[in-house]
Image 1: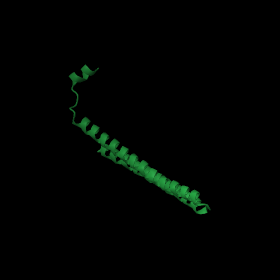
Image 2: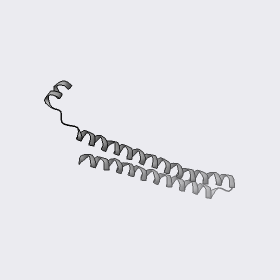
Image 3: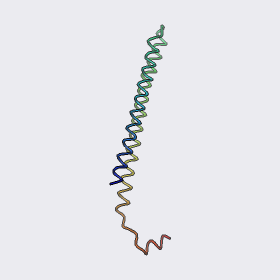
Image 4: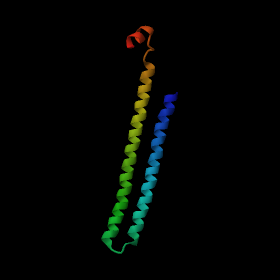
Length: 99
């Protein structure tokens, strides 16, 4: 059952990093929106608003890629552990051949 625990660990680490990434993006978004509120001219305000919007969009895309990579790694690990457990134990003859 250790492999199941490691699978869960891989996924939970990805979930934590996603949460950290999205929290940082929300703070950065707030910073850009605050700057947009302080500006006096429309082009600069629109530029800051666009930067705020893009920050969240790019962070969401990065978080999705992190989650997909973690899922792939966890699934790959589970498959390899399952395959290793299904292989027969080496006998003395095959062990001597491997040496």
